[in-house]
Image (cartoon, rainbow, N blue to C red):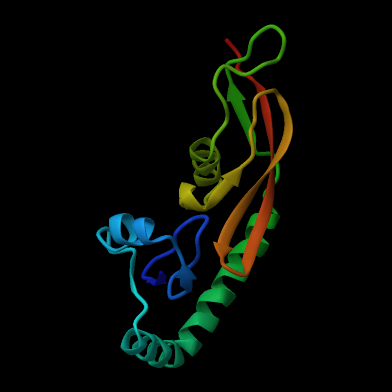
Length: 149
């Protein structure tokens, strides 16, 4: 089933992309939650016209994302304190919410949904990927340390 996405869906595609999904996923999730519509011929024509009109807006959005990516690349010293066992293993894990909060302290209001963090289960240095635009992403280094009592 072909679906036109009406908003970004992580792991599937970005707004205005035409994607192939299984019928159940499209009918039971994407369409009822208004994240997508069926890609009929008329819907495709409307999408093409809309994309043509919004091309210059998209260029500005991409330029803004690249500018923010350049600023985010300058971020250093992102330290996330967490509770740690005697062997250095974290209780729980470090997730995108904690990184978003630390970035907010540095003056960057980044939505946690666009921050991708691999499994962080021990103290040490890691990197998180921030997907600002479908063509613009930046890696942010951070360090996980033991929380001081």
